[in-house]
Image (tube, rainbow, N blue to C red; front, side, top):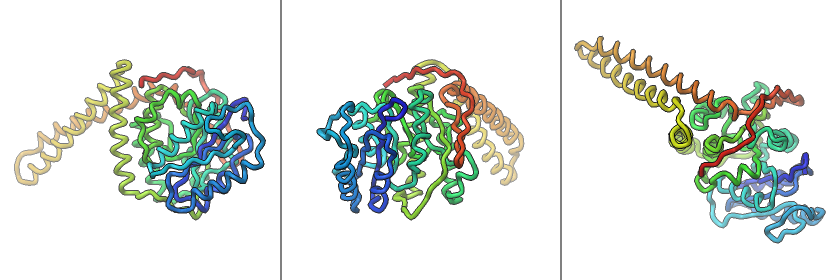
Length: 358
């Protein structure tokens, strides 16, 4: 247990045979149960998980106060395998469901690729264990030193997804949305409609949007980027295309649900007017330029279109400002961890209630 909370850790694996065993072995002792989920890997990940789990479980002392739902009395490591490959999100959700059934209070996720330092797991779960947040996540972009292990290609891609995820999720100060080193409370999992969240790699981005609609508090935890010899199974072009469309749908769903269905917020009016003004003005400006190049009079149209673009941008800016202001209380003060120091800034009073609409 950790600070009076039962802690479970979900270790996800897909083709991580060289690394997943070490990840399981290095999970800190304060963790009560480890849910090692193999998403039908074609390599030896499942055999590695079973071997390590068997060795650990032979030496563990039974935790009698922990509810057990799978007949695994005394097991610290619970091996779970999908018969078919369903995606990263599906593996996390499987671990979440087992942890909820076992009445874990805080559930963290550590991917089986060895990129998540077990020594800072306490920092990841602290905001949730201490009741400051409903969900906490690592962020490799908060401090320049933490980005040393990240290539320029990864950094640019991550920065782009961070910007898009701010619009989609409504968490305007939260960064590095692709970071899977996370912690969540049992109550938050129970309030989520897991079935409506994607099973694919966009799970982390999609989850943030659902957390916002449920008015959950999210905390960023600074951490360093760690990359070794592991190879990502993500194909980046299809991944970026899929996630971008997912974020667009998530953005529209969040605005409709929070600012129309739950309560009215003028942000949706400014978002709509700004989008229409910018899109219409851009189209008109392009047409005016073409007319001018063809020797026709397009100057007046270009001026009008430019004004529409400007008004659209102003409206979008107001929409963003209203949206950010509405969600400010859901963004917990960042835990400024870098290297070996922790700087905790004062946190204003936050509402402790969460709301589910699904």
